[in-house]
Image 1 (cartoon, rainbow, N blue to C red):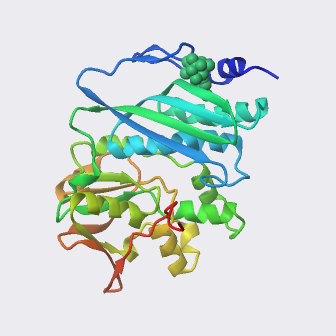
Image 2: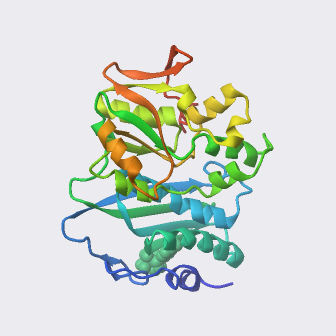
Image 3: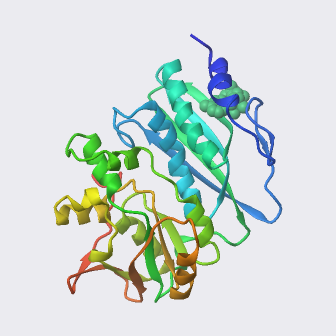
Amino acid sequence: MSSEFELIERYFQRRAGDSATVSLGIGDDCALLDVPHGQQLAVSMDTLLIGVHFPHNTSAFDIGYKSLAVGLSDLAAMGATPAWATLSLSLPQLDSNWLADFSDGFFQLADHHQITLVGGDTVKGPLSITVQVHGFIPSGAALKRSGAKVGDLICVSGRIGDGALGLKMALGEINTQSKPLEKLNRPEPQVALGLALRNRAHSCIDISDGLAADLGHILKASGVGALLHADQLPLSQELQQQPRAAAEQMALFGGDDYELCFTISADFLQKLLTQKSLPKITLIGQIEAEQGLRIEHHGRIKTLSPNGFDHFEHR
Ligand code: ADP
Ligand code: MG
């Protein structure tokens, strides 16, 4: 059995990559990092727990991938360029096969987005993974939750609800094609879209707890309300094969989609839609002065409570 130090060297240090902003990476007591002039540092941390944030049967590769993906999604939602990550691992034992697969998943995404692992911590304990991500944003250009304006159009990237459908599949509750399961385990953080939204979108959030809950955060922070149109929600083919009410439920209240929800003026949306190589963008509603979240269904309007997934709701 190798020591903790050999393990860090083999699976994390040697693969950690290089960057002009990293003066000193893994191996000393601290990393030494340089924030480029005129940029702000965007920082976010997420902890993934077995049985809570991923089912017990999730592969080590997918756990490694997802533990970074959720952080990259936060950077995307602020319009930040990924720069550095730190990784805190609590492991029940030093299992080389597990670590090899975990680091393959982590670095597949890290290399794709050129984010450099600059340090971390490794302890023995129940399986838990904490990743902190750091990104750069030109000072003052961050996409906050608080900027939505009455009359803004509300848009989402990609398709929503597949994270929830994927979870039902992972738990064996539903058996359909494997695509939503892939989306649950390997969400694609919308980093390029986040960058394209800088200086255009008025507000932005990533959808991790469900559209209603996350859009609800924008509405609260901005002091506005919204009207959504049920028939405009972008649902995948797999989700459309589910009963309509269940599909809408998953799209509105399911979690783990990691798409972006943003509000933008009609002019800027037109400009955005002419830009090449961006993901699918769908207009789903508009910001209104009247507080609260409403949804229109064949001409009838219902009020939505923002009951997305909430870890403390059963207290
Ligand atoms: P210290 O005891 O001084 O905190 P550690 O032995 O915890 O040092 O870590 C040694 C080096 O390895 C540090 O640079 C630390 O950032 C890095 N490191 C430890 N665990 C990880 C990990 N899971 N991923 C990346 N780097 C790690
Ligand atoms: Mg340490």
